[in-house]
Amino acid sequence: MSCVSESSHLNKFLRHRYLNLPQGDFCLVTYVWIDNCGVDLYSKTRTMDCEPKILADVPEWDVGLETEESSTEMLLNPVCMFRDPFFLDPNKLILCEVLKHTREPAEWNHRNRCNTLMEKVKDLHPWFGMEQEYTLLGVNGHPYSWPRLGFPKPQGLYNSSVGADRAFGRDIVDCLYKACLYAGIKISGTKAEHMPSQWEYQVGPCEGIEIADHLWMSRFLLHRVCEDFGVVATLDPKPMAGDWNGAGCHINVSTASMREEGGIEHIEKAIEKLSKRHEEHIRVYDPHGGEDNKRRLTGRHVTAGIHEFSAGVAKRRVSIRIPCRVALNKCGYFEDRRPAANCDPYVVTCAIVRTCMIEEKKEK
Image (cartoon, rainbow, N blue to C red; front, side, top):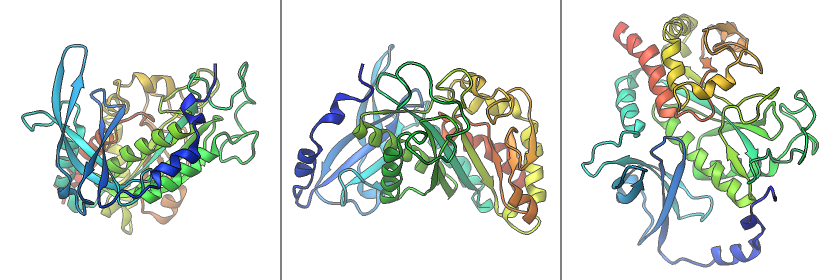
């Protein structure tokens, strides 16, 4: 069975020939939304008579959602606008939240609740950065460029690697990077990860709700770029059983007080609060209540164990890491290494704000 999709073999020269045709004053607007499982992304495109200059220029749109129990109509409410790296300017990508026909948030619309919470702590100026790990697969589900039978060489060669025998899929990674920059996503870096065909990119620093908006749209671009290459990107936290690294979505966190001189005191207070709510955070750090992270947070492969909270300076087999530069400067940020690659960033940031920042706001 081929590891690359048939559509990727279509003549791309012909595709560009048609995409380069003028489109007049019309604008193609692609609406992107999160499905009712809180994991997958969907999209559809409409024609507008002119380019929307601000988000308010983009109208709501209806969408039919089907489950095993029912079929219902919802509203797509635009919340964030990006440039379109596939159709190019003046065309747009629009991240949407899903509303019921009553205009109330859908049950899985975590953005609405997250935005409300971020407004409550905006005077703390919370900054976030998220490190999205992912694994490239063939359409047959086998890791991209792995031997058809057997396994590649053991881990140790691949982290931040260079070379055709150890860095698999760099063309995809580079195209995703440029697509994110073109779109206006605050992507700040990328690297090869420990497992072959596994990569990471970083989004941020972003303030408040922006981090989750940008991470979700970056995931859409990841899947679209992979589609063009005929491969699949998975956010499964443990895509390969055995002696291989899992995939996480580490989150870096700071407030204005943590970034100021002597901010290490506020960082340590936040870590102490997190230590008291470890189980609560584990339950929301993957979309299946911690079941996905059970396969990943084993205490091996650069992770801490799932059942015990730990923290340390310049350590990576811990729940919370204080980077060495932060310890030296006595201010900065901390890194929560527990979120799984398939986490919902709205849910993760909400949990951190509730635990670490609501009390800080009360103290002020």
